[in-house]
Image 1 (cartoon, rainbow, N blue to C red):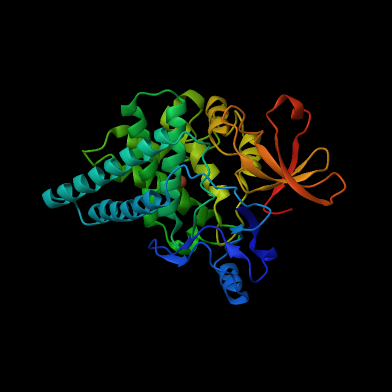
Image 2 (tube, rainbow, N blue to C red):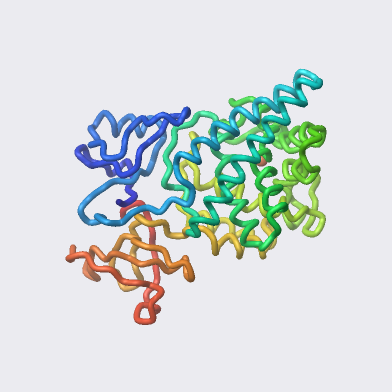
Length: 368
Ligand SMILES: [Fe+2]
């Protein structure tokens, strides 16, 4: 299986991974032969890259950090739970409201335990690219992805389980305030006016005001909503907090939040591949993001996910075939073109092996 751009897709190509609609229903099943109409449909939904099956990539399997079924269940739980908590706030909560929010939080806790269980059972570099889902309201899928990234980062920090669960809850609820912002502003393709940007910024305080009143939640969860857009150098919002003034949970969330935002498709811009997103995050190392958190994050994500086509410093071209846990930036590669750009009988090399340490990845793309 490998990742290719929908733009370069020819009719007859076989889909490698299913594509889902916003309710988790399969729109296009794995193995479907794509027609011109189907390819046009993908473009219309702003899907830029897909996994396909072909001869060159035969046997390359994409390892999922979280099973697709669990991820879709998490999206449903978050969608329902966020709406329950948001509507209780609008309708002045009472005993029944408290009961409902308690139930929503228990369902969050259950899904968090499942996610943490899956992350610890399948210790693999995180790769959420594998799931292609069409969703108009991306707050829900974003919340699930941020929960997965932040949970893994919390685990890498060596924190006790209780703290990891709190961070995961904070991640699930961090953008709750966005449910009160008009979708036209959230999805606006062009530049925002100052008033519009101020409205977007208000989601942190809005989320905090609601969450701090939910007694079943620790106050740190409300602080995740309040502080996840703060930056180390004090240029973030809403309060312009600096380094040590920012809660550790928010520092973790901030990395997970931005990484997922830039690696996800949006109506107004294409998704970045993980290695590019990481470069962008590193541009803010120590100013936007906490240095230690960024370093830990780099070690737990698939910088070059399986199925990606890469160009090596000696000119050869190949497909990423396997991760190296001890060296996530130097995966195993199935070479498909030689130094002269001629097709060759595919063979594998391990960039982390002693013989190949002088060869680097110089370009990576969904099919070069
Ligand atoms: Fe946010």
